[in-house]
Amino acid sequence: MPQLDISTFPSQIFWLVITFIAMFLIMWRISVPKIADALEARQKRISDNLGRAEDIKKEAEAAIEAYEAALAEARAEAQTAVAEASAALLEEQHAREAELAETLKKRVAESEAGIAAAVNEAVQSIRDVAAEVAIAATERLAGEAPGGDDATRAVDAVIKARG
Image (tube, rainbow, N blue to C red; front, side, top):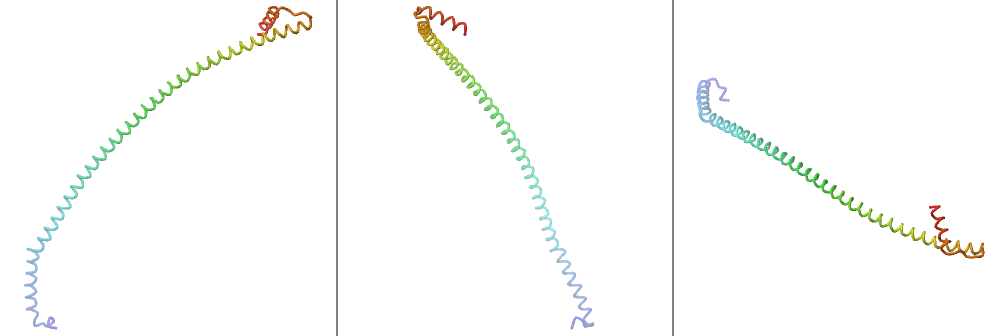
């Protein structure tokens, strides 16, 4: 192998130094600044993105706060509406109950009047029947019929004594 020949070492070392210096200068003057610029641009872009992300995060937090405030307000309005509706329904229920109670009072009074009239009519019928029975019984026992007014007075006296 010619690289291992000792007689060519000085020329190889010379070209190695020349090549190394050329490569070093190319890297130092051209490649490294481009890499540094690319890294710097990348770092700047990352910083800008982080700044925008922080701004967006603040906007999102503000939007969340506004949403929560609107939600709380809507809940308060809904509770107020429910309370108003409940109060209106309760008031309407009380009004209907009062109206129904009044109607029931009237019906009870009418029924009581009807019952009282029926009782009076029944008592009158019983009184008349009792007077007829008393007249018939007295006529059978005594053989003579008492007057209608006497029998009616006697039945009235017994009814007053019992009732």
